[in-house]
Length: 241
Image (cartoon, rainbow, N blue to C red):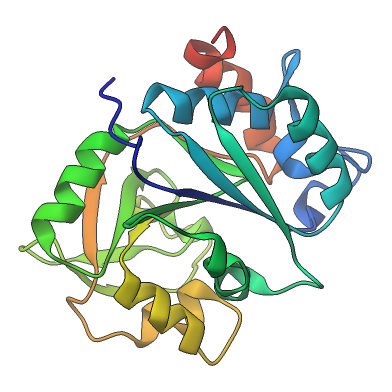
């Protein structure tokens, strides 16, 4: 893999409550969910390291202290890890706005701390830069898009709109929760009139504002028991890193 993230900040949003997992994790933060004998965060950092990541900012909330303790003891020596703790639940847009002062290098790569998509981030970065868009979304095709809500992509590779969740709606293209943002998009997030990145910002932008980097990539949402059970098989190539 090409080490393209050396001069780019990475933001990991890991402040969620983990309510969909119920008692499965027994008080463990989702980002520290055990995958085999390793916490998910360890695998995520190893994966980012393959692309050359050297500076990662964590937006923390629920059980933040456990994540901070883990990072202090186990973060790779060549990755600077910065923890920013939310004063309370802020949502995705609010979390990014809260930690934006720590972002030093643009574009910034933003990802959710409870999902994983096995895509070439360097190809995604190249596509984002070539698009000239203020923001880009990594998109993947899944068998049940209704579980997430789907993304409409026009012939020019721009996002034309978002469709609501519709259980049993069949296959389609979804946002994988991985983004590249320029300063213009960060300013839009700061001015958003609600806590949700998707609902309070993306869905209100003019069609064609955002670029889509789409493909068929292995995708995990470890915030659900079924995908948490699937995680060891999907993450097997990275567990030994």
